[in-house]
Length: 255
Ligand code: MG
Ligand code: MG
Image (cartoon, rainbow, N blue to C red):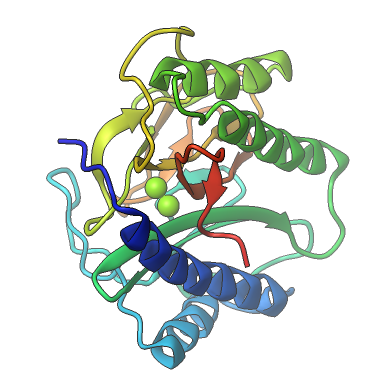
């Protein structure tokens, strides 16, 4: 089901989105060599707590998950693509980290993700991260009234493929609202002019994921949550929650 939000609801979602942006900013600032993923989760928890926000991640358990998700962030390092569990793993020089965070404020959810490097960055990682961001920007630019879901998917996928990267096909963006995952699905690759028409008041999480090896293959790590590349190549993720408006796309998860 696709829920069309009122302008007042979108304004409320902007406040939830702002909390997510603050949490991601704080986590990125805290991320350094020797810091554990669990400590980064604590940083995000503190931001949510201060804002009076809940976490749509904590305790989340889709059908395929072996246990409820234990953190308020997903922390996916190097070959981990998304859904990484914030463990006692200590960040090392040159790690590529993807952090996904959600917040629920006054009943509304925001969902956003960033990737960055710790210590000395590899050139290939910088290019991977930049591509995920560029794909997100292209997806946002296509998120306009009158376009279709396929136009966003095509915009995202074109940037990722042009760079030679793989795309995990079974994972997509999604509608966002009172719950984290609503209709419609927003794939990271698709055909322009296809799919649902975009209307004022739709709110979508657009979230490109790219795999450096170029293959589309991925699998679950033994923890049952973390998605990893099968070739061991590194991955990056970028996500914003975006409202479709007559005035153009409105990013709700910026600072
Ligand atoms: Mg997310
Ligand atoms: Mg999402």
